[in-house]
Amino acid sequence: MIYNILLSLFPLLSAFPLFMMLVELHGKRPAARQLPWLAFACYMVLWNSVFTRFMAEHPVLWTLNPIGDIFMMLSFMFLFVREENRKAVEPIRKSYRVRSIVAFLIYIVSNVVCFHILRPPVFLIPLIVGALVVFYFDRLYSSLSYYPKTRIHLVFYFFIISTFLVLPLFRLFFIAQIGYVFMCRYRNWIAHKDRMIVQHDEERKMNHKIVTKMGETVNDFSDLHESLQNFLTNLAQGIEAKSAAIYIWDEKEQLFRCSDIYGVFFPLVRGNEMSFTHVETLKEIALSQNISEHDNIVWECGMSRIGTYVPFASQDGRILSLGSRAANIRSLILEPLNFNQQLLGVLVVENKLYERYFSESDYYLVQNFAHYATMILKANEAVMERQNQARTQAELQLGFHIQSGLLPHKIPEFDGISLAGSMTPAKEIGGDYFDFLNLPNGNLGIVIGDVSGKGVPAGMVMTSLYAFLHAECRYFVNSYRALVRVNSDLAGHISETMFASLLFFEWNPRSKALHYTSCGHEHILHFKKMDNSLDTIKSGGIALGMIDDNSKIIREKSLIVRPGDTVLLYTDGVTETANEKREMFGLERLKAFVEKYQALSANEIRLALLEELKSFAHGAPQADDITILVMKF
Image 1 (cartoon, rainbow, N blue to C red):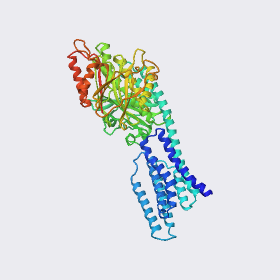
Image 2: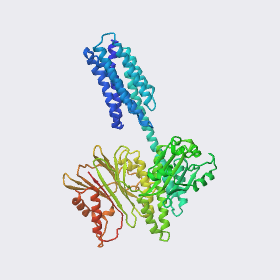
Image 3: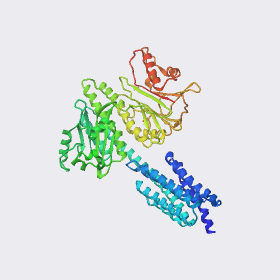
Image 4: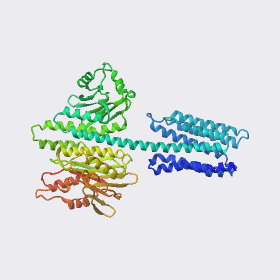
């Protein structure tokens, strides 16, 4: 009776890993990575509750029973080596797969030979070989995993015990241990999600703090060093860094010069000074030395135009090459300062306070706020070039530099969608904005917006909007939630007279689904190829920054698109383009244009519309920015 009760527990315990996997998938754990785990859980349920019972009634199939068990252990080892090596710094070694499969094949051969060719008592041979093979799997796991866990070792050991002591109780220990492993995976995932939520809140608070400080101190670009010093101070204090510096690129001399420093900054060049050199002496050394060596980390970052994140400087050869200074550098972040295709310099942030190391969140924040440094450098350049012009004209030009630096310089490529976008600035800047965002869920964010006002105020609002939007998209859930949070952030940091209209589209390349949330932007023009008809969709919502809480006014919607469809987004500079008779281009002409040219590619439609507007204006001056964004499916 006890024997039958124990056997009846096999299916129940075997189903627990499958139950945990279904819970994980329901909880939105990344599905692609979990499919092998789900397949293993299904195999375990079927094997322990169906196939083994069926084989017990057919002695001729008994040979398959131990082979199926060893295959289950092989799959288990594959899954955990693959899972834990995701955290490893070095790439996983592929040869373990060949070795483990060879061991599995050796076991199959020994099992078949001993059961079907030789006679008892040689049946003990496959038992011993099977135990050795499983022990070998355990050793492979230990040697290849990032951090071997005791609970994984217990799975292998319980299996070996249940192989020799053929009693249901030991088999139950083995199955229960696998169930416990799956439960721990789920608990670790939940703990990770909780940590990410806390980290997101901390990032948002830090983001707000830095934005507020930047808005208070970075407003006068006539004194370059004062502006850069304020920027470095706000950034370093915001992310709790010990020091920071900006290296400015000298195009004529082909070298980097250290322009401004905050804190105890150790120069990123080789030197002979003692490790505890006086702070002022270190500053003098940094400001007097130039970087022109091609193997220097600042040079590599600037020339590659790619940010560099060095969480542990003691493991990076580029830092170790600095000699005595390397001992004082624990952690490092570098970010190039680019304006369109022009290299302006490199931002360097050095060492975390309290002997900590920089995290990926710190790296992200440095990337996010490096645009302020770029804005300062270009704004100062514009001020110096136009110091004899009127202040109003200079502000308009500054606004153009600020805004242009935030626009994307490369059109992304995603399955099922072709994109084209551009912003044609006017003499007076209106603050148009468009962007493409690689979202953490693998989808593409497509943004178009327009800030009210002109000049530097509009440029500063656009920079803050850019920072808030990118911060929210780091933990993206959907466009509605992102814009509710962005509105809350923006409303407290801009003037009551300013606001920004925005359209946020999310394209899913796997399901070919398009969702969007609107904050008071222009119409959406959607040409349906199948119906040969054009839909003019009122985007709706309320502009960002007009009220503190827009959660009850805006909402996320779906836009059903099919192959061949075209979606055109624009700012009011398109429909308000005027000719010499002061006639506006208007929405009706734009709709007629889309119907006429919808068969062209996305970029051809963009170019054709610019040409159409130019022809319509017939030489009349452009009064506002013209931003066009075309989606072709």
